[in-house]
Image (cartoon, rainbow, N blue to C red):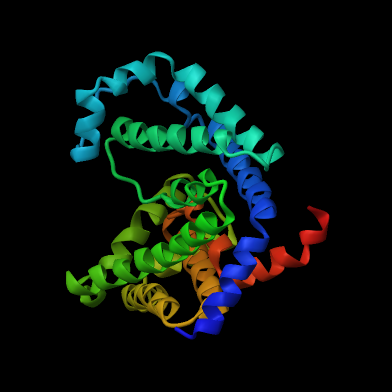
Length: 279
């Protein structure tokens, strides 16, 4: 990767830390509001018998330390403090205490939500992206922010490699089987729209589904370019938006919080830099 590209990227992140914090926590607050609207905050989920399903080491630590039941007991207070820490981080950009509180609480929220849902979700964008803001040093912030960019590239590229390695790329019916439940839902509800017609069309054409599946994997695989140069970031931004929109429309797959990673791509930083005078 050319040193000049890296230096330019670091300078943009370093010089726009305050504005990036305002933008990030504004979007984070919107995300929390959406979670509230869809009854996804801890105090809204309730205590489910599916808790602790698919447990791993991190989950065992929470369980052994009795953190799970303790936090759930005060879940309403937990959600309120999480929201307040987000607002304070948005308004008071010259301190990092609220950012630290937000990061710790959101980490707990992420773990507990997965435990209550009985599934390991990959919506890690908000969690990862909140980490750089815990540092008051602009230099440390810049390096952690840059690390989030490379983590984003790794997540997408490794996902493509995993699909190829386990044979999903070559399984003709893979994407078609993902489309069928949505087609069935539209059919049972007698839903009639342009999107439903597309879904019905895909449900009746296995090989077109497979072509779309290959395209989605190619879009993921292209993120390997992010390890070689920042100049490919515009392509990566377009790729992820296509991947996101395609997955949402076809199979209702939407990793909304992973959109936060787009802040780390060079075009986003360049755009934010144009609005620096408003900070």
